[in-house]
Amino acid sequence: MFKHNTDTQLEQSPTMPLLASGRKKRWSYSSLFFSLFFFVPLILSLPLGNAVISFNVLAYTLFAITYLVAINKPQHQLPFYIAFILALGYITTYSNPGGAVFFGFVAFICGYYYAIRRSLLIMFLVLVSLAALQLLIIKTNDYFLLAAGINSVVLLGFGIMERKETLHQIKESQHAASLRTLSAIAERERIGRDLHDVAGHALSSISLKAQLADKLLSKNNVELAQQEVRALAELSQSLLSEIRHAVSDIKQLSLTDEITKNKALLMEKDVSVNLYIDDDINQHISAMEETQLALIVKELFTNTLRYSNATHVTLSLKLLQVDTPAHSYTLEYHDFGRLDNVNKIKEGNGLRGMRERAASIDAQATMTFSSHPGFTFTLTSNTPKTPLFTKR
Image 1 (tube, rainbow, N blue to C red):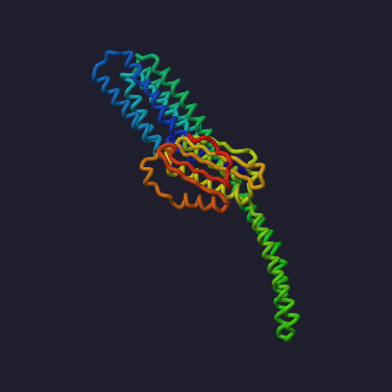
Image 2: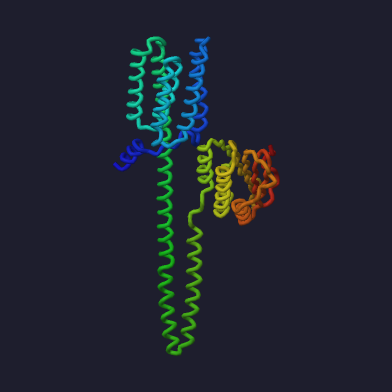
């Protein structure tokens, strides 16, 4: 029941990401190429008067500007832009049946941002108005209604499919976040139970022995009191050891999960990610190393998200000395963004933090900045015998 209500609410009133954001950004901008079909009927009708050509060029320019602004606006501001594009479509059809293209873009925007019933209703009303326009006013250009109808229906379908895929991604993201929250709560509860079990009995014993030692001292029974104090010290050391053991068993950060999560974030921003990671790497690194490597990877991906103009990054994590007692591995990260004024770049807290994390696991970190690739990070544990791979 709860799941059904959540899914229904998500479908009816989600906050849809902008069409000019994430992986949709490239397609939303490049789709303007197809709007150039607006000029095909004009070209086929040449020669035309300067007034007709100027009018259509102006109309298309206004459409392109309005569309680019619209895909960068939140959903509640869209009705004005949609109405303006529709008006341009109606007006231009008097001199150019290519105006049918405009209605397709409106259909896609509606299909993406609005629930299916609402988008279908909007496009039904638009198609009815186009039919009336064709039959009552535009009695030439017989293929106008057919072109506008097919264009609108097809692009409405694309918009609806894009909406469904985006809603699915939002739902999966929320589900993953819920699982992480539940996992964190369960982990805290486990740690609390373990500490209670470990410390409860020992602290009670310590309290009793402290009281007994105090009574013995008050009776000048120093020898027995000293025995109780020594027992107190032993209990304290034992308790401290058990607490350390319990704390060391706290769940470490997962390197695999951190890579997967951050790769998805980069791909959402249209950054391709190539991974070269040994399958059995986790079997050859300690929990401490896994945690520090996960935090370093997180910082690397975060820097790309925040500061880089890269469209491509690579991450490699390879074992080099598997058969030796002192295992050796190397991590390399290449951010293929372009950098200007390389000499003016200064290390901030994030880069210094990665060096410190590398040092904490007995590894060396080196960073280089260049024009292309813009940033390279290399971490090596111990002394690798062979290079990871040839530099580009």
